[in-house]
Length: 384
Ligand SMILES: Cc1cc2nc3c(=O)[nH]c(=O)nc-3n(C[C@H](O)[C@H](O)[C@H](O)COP(=O)(O)OP(=O)(O)OC[C@H]3O[C@@H](n4cnc5c(N)ncnc54)[C@H](O)[C@@H]3O)c2cc1C
Image (cartoon, rainbow, N blue to C red; front, side, top):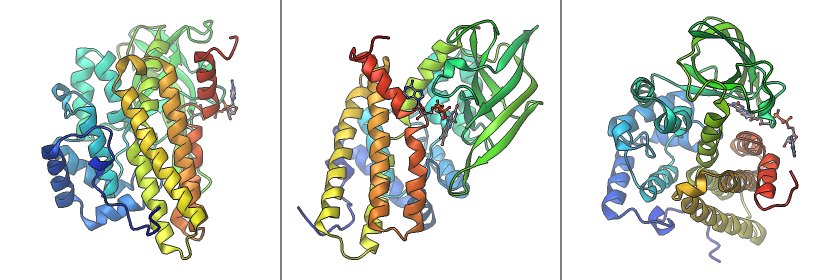
């Protein structure tokens, strides 16, 4: 093994399972080299969560939007790039390798694709351009104090009064609700209904009277999640996706999109580079650490191949098991990389912050235990 541990600047194409072609590679590299200022790169390097600091995030999203590349996975007719999977992967990795700020956006990654797949024409015309321009930032209102892993226990009430629903109750752990303009949420229309039945999937403006947001601080003092309260909040019955009473079907579609989109190979490669930089700062790397770095690098490449194969196959992603495999693999890799970053440079506040930030990865988007249950069921290991 090469023990030098110079920063890995090899062309992303050399590692990708698919090659997007020389013209595309050159266009992406030229764009990134021209537009990524030292300040933006520094913000990218210092990002430990799933989203870069607000100033860098806003500046970079405006640049990428102007270039027309903000929604790599959306079809061109909705303002996306219409890129192939190989092109999307290349762009994600190239951004990671040049330390671009992270643009994790619920609008681009989850609710946008859902509206494209299941929204009506009016919703597409209203929401998609606003997501692309940054006018709308979305958060996800699924979990409740008494409904986490068992989401079907949710009780946020949506009582129909004429052309409106009236919402009462609360949502919890809502990421970035304090910055969001909109929330997609699941609520119960029929209080006598149980589990998956009697739900509705709604699209709510956060400035609707009766909505209040209370931040929940993390262990490291950061505030990303919130509890959101609903006190007689009125929302038009038409602001929903899917039928009244059948919200669960819509929620399942969204969850399959979210799980396969959350921890990308770009996110893993950034974490790896952060750990590697920490190793370069620290003295006396021994064979033990070199072996751990090499092992993780191979596993990121393997994950990329597995993810690409599954995401390129819509039939595969339509069922839960492959997206559960990806969710478990990606989040556990992310945690191992950040643990290595801490082992190798324990004094670094960045390494400490990264370590803590990734602990939550095996909890959000469904805990890894729940995903293992799904897999056990898929391969016939359980009786229920
Ligand atoms: C950082 C962060 C961000 C989040 N962001 C959002 C968000 O934006 N929107 C949103 O709606 N939610 C969000 N969540 C909530 C997240 O989806 C829930 O925390 C998660 O589903 C687990 O629910 P819970 O916390 O109620 O734990 P519980 O469901 O009470 O689970 C507690 C423990 O028991 C285990 N467990 C539970 N049931 C089983 C079972 N049947 N078999 C085996 N083990 C089981 C779990 O794996 C877990 O370890 C976020 C959470 C975190 C930590």
